[in-house]
Image (cartoon, rainbow, N blue to C red; front, side, top):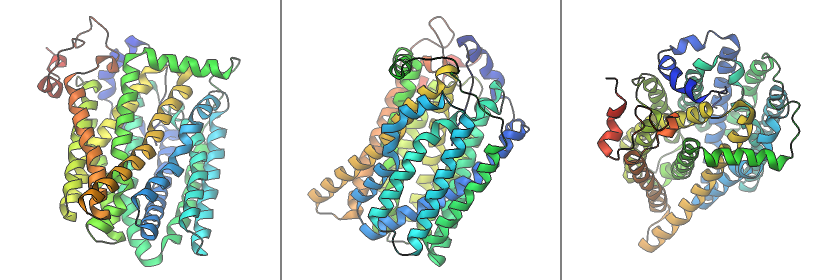
Length: 458
């Protein structure tokens, strides 16, 4: 869960970045509202990861199909593609706290229904797809409301630290949730996982409910919806930095998502292991992301995001490609650890960039466009990867194990190559640099991209 705020001017973004990078993360926790939301979100994220392990494992166990896992991704994430813009418009027009409370209650109810369905033996693939679809609709409205929460909880100069901490809690949960889920599901079954997820919403509901009301950002402004959407689209189209950030997020989502979606099949068909190994693999990704979040805040303050992002894309793609080639679970877990490390570098830097570059008055709409790109690309990537893997495996006479290795491996290899290209030809506008600013000069080169020597203080 990520969230940010503010309406920075171009000069403010450039001036504040050095100061921001030196702020200790523990300083953000002094804000009571943020601290409560962070703790509540941690509990809810653990529950979410536990449920995700259960649902994906049940689908893989019942179907042994990459296409069905891709269909599950479409059901869970597809609604964001259709409802993302209406949700973004709505979040700019209503009390964001009320909207967030409503969507959290809806997702709590869906989690409870899933627990009941599994307890009575009704959790078949169609039921899993149906509940995933309904939950996806709730998520489409929850996500932009959640992303606009932190702006009210921390000062502008501490927003990058707040984003990093929210990413860290999500990835700490990615370590704890799957590890717990693997043990609990092996012993007591998936019903317990789904029940615990439903209960985990209590903490985040209390935390959000304790924050102040969030009046509409567009109060008193009455424009036709298509004009509101057009304004956001023109902003993304005309701002080079925002446009390139969206491209990076789109590529990261489409090319990296298949790995996690197909992870149950890697475990069952490639390693021939059980639920506990699946939990370990997910925990390895989360552990790497936690380490990545800790080190991201320690990078030199002069090292810019338009270097961090392509470097992280290339490195995470490399680690994921090596994972797809691995057949030993130990080596595979090590590759996932590295991929999680650089994935959080890329994702946090992308989200920080768009938040700092976007005016507050259109934040909901612009974030909705980004959510549509991100959540829409994930199921598309998963389905295309599944189709490609099945065809390549059939041509080579292989089974589901080879199909998942080839399908995911081709996508992660593309991610590695795209990251390298973007590292050679960089986009300084991502850091709101303009012609004449120090560090703006476009000097293509891989080594210059890695070292960012042009930005090093004299």
